[in-house]
Length: 140
Image (cartoon, rainbow, N blue to C red; front, side, top):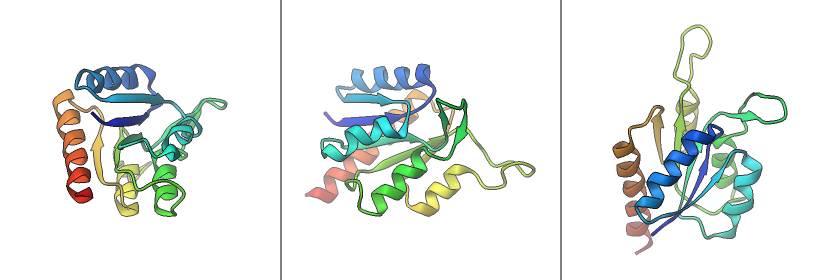
């Protein structure tokens, strides 16, 4: 059993992923803002973070880069434990508006694995187990 934090502003999607992971025996905490995620992660009781790279600011109702990219930078600066991060995003590269995707930036910043949404349930579970197994193997 692993302790997993999901940072996702799509509440229905976060609830679905939470249920899927809890059915596998994991303990899951869902967060819709970086501030909420930062309440749980530094405690050291987190084994994996699933983080949307772009989170809507609940006060302004618009996209903000204060999502998974913020968590990756805080982890790399030593302000968070070295917890593996699965980066997710529905924002794909687009020649006119977004030639570089948030996941490309996340990969450059050192995210452990990255997936574009929508994510099939079997793909999510397989990826989560892969990251958790890598973490266990490196701890031994």
